[in-house]
Length: 86
Image (cartoon, rainbow, N blue to C red):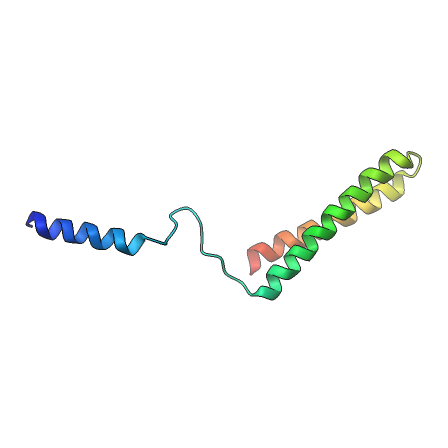
């Protein structure tokens, strides 16, 4: 192979790889799924914040704290599942 051919192959490969990330997958999924994930994430953060407030404001209400905390975790698990399914 001549050096001109090698240079052309390298230039073509560089031009083809521009815009493609080596480390990240391209974003896919519909806007509805992205919106649902955002809503679930916000609800998770609010639930987590509520659990922390309950823990410190009502120390004798451990059952309420665990209920709110586990509810928030379930929301996060659902959001996590949506991230990988769609």
